[in-house]
Image (tube, rainbow, N blue to C red; front, side, top):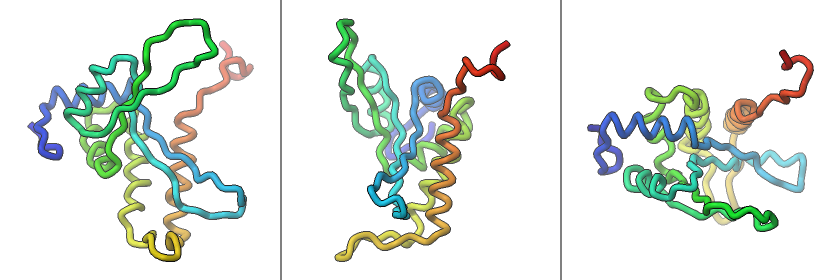
Length: 169
């Protein structure tokens, strides 16, 4: 049994969580949106989530890891009746521990977990502190790490164009 924030997880549960993440999970870093193209904001959003039509699965995850579950809007323009879609989000303060918990059991998302760990480690380094004058500027080193992690994770999410002549058999 492994203690995860007061919850005892068996090796089977940890393996199952890794399998869920490998198949249904999202490990995401988004680039800051700004109107000023020269802006070097270090505020990259990070999250880990699982999207599914079976809320019972997401409730099971919430019981073991914590987090929140939100409904995801479906396409209302379509005439097709669809099941409701739900998304579980890992608590932001548990992301690093969640990654470390699942890395040994992950097959597909292992590198994505490693990238998330590297990116999130820059959030524990002193530098960005909110105060009266907004958020303190981050060092160029931290900005570089976050941007590199963002680009690598983005490249792992990119699907190849299967119509491209070089990819056809």
